[in-house]
Length: 104
Image 1 (tube, rainbow, N blue to C red):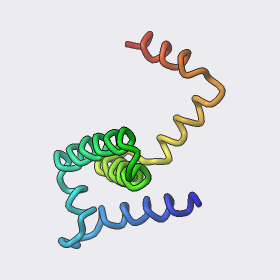
Image 2: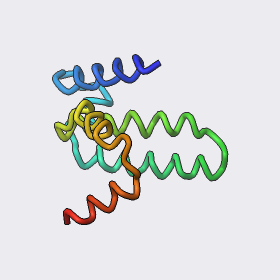
Image 3: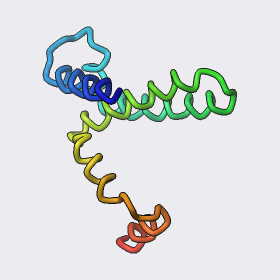
């Protein structure tokens, strides 16, 4: 099942290096402002869908796609994010949040 994510990440990375002008992904990757706006818009749509109990899965998929594009547009590798999540395993979310707060 997670192969779908790997394939999507690979496609996004391919689009980043493409010159394909008709690619929505390429358009997002080339315009960081648009990319950020789309993530915010999609998160709002997901929250609305959850409240209405309608189209939640569709909207969740949109959020994941746009988040992956935003990460790639900002040269943040998903592998780095996964590594960070791995480091946090076994640590209470409250403890981890306190640690981050103490670092400020």
